[in-house]
Image (cartoon, rainbow, N blue to C red; front, side, top):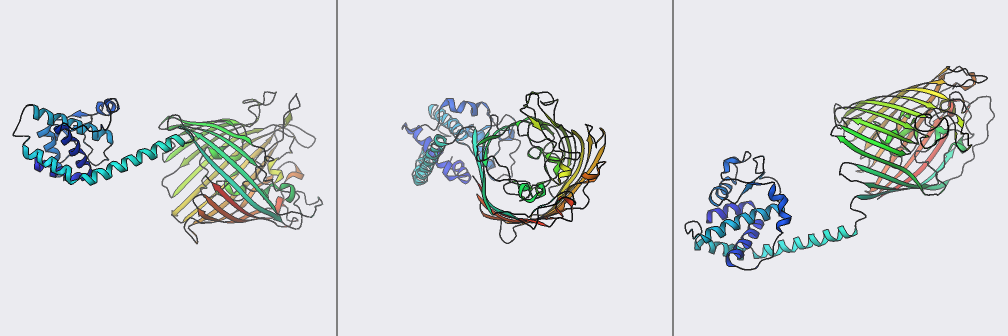
Length: 548
């Protein structure tokens, strides 16, 4: 018997001491506080089965350091249970329920031996050993009980004060100081007179509150509230090429900005339903991990990711991802930006839409590449009730004015968009990425200058570089260079981009702590609106992002 207890002692002195205290008290007839109730243990007990030989455990070997102790408990005392699949799982942590179940089995066996007066198994010396060990570990038992009581008190306090049993509140607030610089506002046509660029330094904000709820543990319902006053720079600079990534004004009004629900149909199928403000870049891999976030990523709209992920944004939709955790993943999506408008020419299926598909290859964490395609329709009409209008936004308000509306804002346009994007991470400090895309626009209306069926071509590309832990752990130095969407071929003579505008962006993300990031950045647009008669435009910004 002594050998048995000293073997058990090697496993965990604290647990052994607790077991001995309970066993000794039961033998002496003393009243001890119960660890749990039968009802609480029923589920755990049902999942375990008594064994009569240590050889019944498939994962216990004679070479294991506790083999003899376990063999004695099983074959001599018969108070060890295993799992239904024939395993003992000796290396996993012991739960309080399992401890109670095992202790109860051993106490029952001890009581049985005492009742039958089996002197050769339970002797006075054994009982004396129990008493001595109880006294020896009395301090440890008291400490253990105090810690357990403290943990139970803290757990009760957290449960009583948490926001919800199923909902988490995740917030983000951005404070921004920015200003645009340059001699003149940009114009698309070289023959168009321009005006001086007059810009003031602004201090503005954007705040978001996300309510994230889960009902099964693998699903998520998102409800996002947003308010802000960060305006688009286009009114000052004359071009959307200078737009900041976090410019999303609501005139300081709180809006229910986003509602969606994502869930698993199986281990290989992930589904997301957007009720409003559906956006592809929130549902698929955009291959630009260091810059994709509007709050903590690129400072420019274009620098976040390829424009192909912006088509069809703003309404309801469905996204299905096959094999999301695999080396090869396919995502299909359908978005309708005017899904909630019942008038003719709008709605879920009769108005603007984007049908999207992406095939991803992820052979390793170091290299990811994706091929994307989208078919879109952008109408241009006013509802019969006169309450809803729709101007063509072919490429997601990114690039030149001609690329955004290839045939004009009032000509309905169908599009076929093709994109390739990749990221390469040779080590933990460096990530290189980029994308390239081509879009073919097809006129769906006829005007004085446009015939239905005519085509226009649009191209764009970019490269990104991120250096992590630059200067300090957690900081990121970033660089983006490329060409925003540009019309290279069109039947409309006065809507072709004659020159090439280049996008250059530098930023430095400074991690103050886990909740605060400060990002100074500079955006430079050469030949804005693809017109080399325009002066270079600069946009400087200092963004501070608080997350909680």
